[in-house]
Length: 116
Image (cartoon, rainbow, N blue to C red; front, side, top):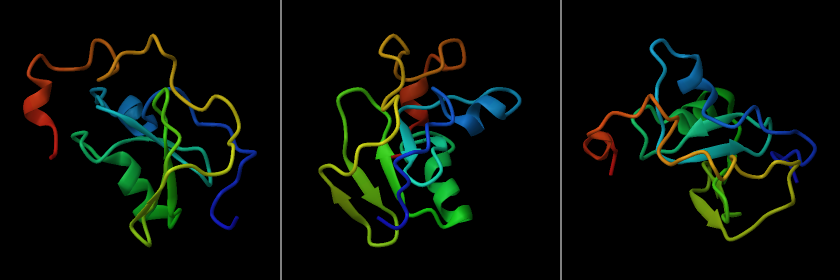
């Protein structure tokens, strides 16, 4: 399917942009670009890196990178799909990795910083 490359592994286990920022950012939930594997934070997260990645690259499909979730979102059509093609492993962040994360970067009042 155009815009989805099942062979590309995820870029890591956390939001690549939050981890690269100084000071390190934090995320609520993680999303995986279905074309290049970039892991970004969701739109509820303070920095909304997954949406920013889609806008900057034109990569239209993202999937959840949360355990137990396999839905896809199309940023162009603004449509959610209950499932999609199998992507290269791993399909979610490590289960022991807390939400929100990463540990040590999440402020005590994190709920107050979520986009709704």
